[in-house]
Image (cartoon, rainbow, N blue to C red; front, top):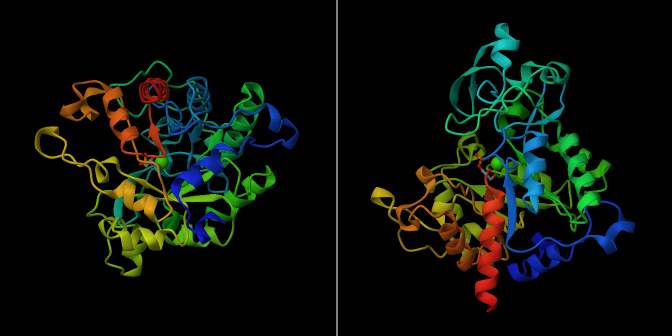
Length: 359
Ligand code: G3P
Ligand code: CA
């Protein structure tokens, strides 16, 4: 197991790159391994399609993403579905379809008003249609696409792997694990069961499970052979399971060499907020990079930062409005992959960077 015997990130990456199949052993010879650094289609190709729909994931694959990223929550009847949060009025037409289901709840210590996946059955979820979350992105696909189940996302990756001859990986994230546990809708068991049912509960499968919380990753370390990634928010924030447990440590404590060595006991990589690698100062001006990539690699951990976006409002001043400049900086800093809303831009930047470094 990678996480039980920390090795260099280079070896880990080589092991992943040599993983040729998502599912059928007989197809191994024809499958192309994923390129490095990995491009992870963040919520699919969410810069172009409503996030977490099969159409968004399919476009990410067409654009060359190596992995597609479903965030996972649960329905009232315990089915895993792809949504960024359990409150779904921002990304679906639930308010129009089920006006009487509006509720006020405490979720991860915050009061949230809206419509929640745990109050709808899968049959009801399937009556909804997705809509674009951000008003400055394309609204023309609103009302067209279903909310997919995790099983449907896996099946899409399997089918596209066979169709393209590329191993399309999946990168599921458990959302609100402590909260969903507390209402009897634990995510971890159905997640592992779904992977196992498709022959993907293997250390060499092109699958990473990620979470901002720590306790569920430690639990998963004893449940599955699949690679695990500890997500990290800004340094002053805390994993919600730490808050519940009265553990005062922050993500800032987890990015220290000591914190990284602890993560390496249960995970294979980290997924840091990109500003933990390249901090930003006043007026969106970048500061010198931190040692996080080198420190994580020294602990035997892969590094997959998030989230890369094309729009000017997300770009630091130093990039001069060119998203390729941001990708280049992170590739040069040695990241092993990254999450992008625009996989086509990320893949093109990777190709340009590769050509430049091999000349
Ligand atoms: O999982 C990596 C990245 O997706 C984390 O941010 O909030 O988009 O899930 P979020
Ligand atoms: Ca995510």
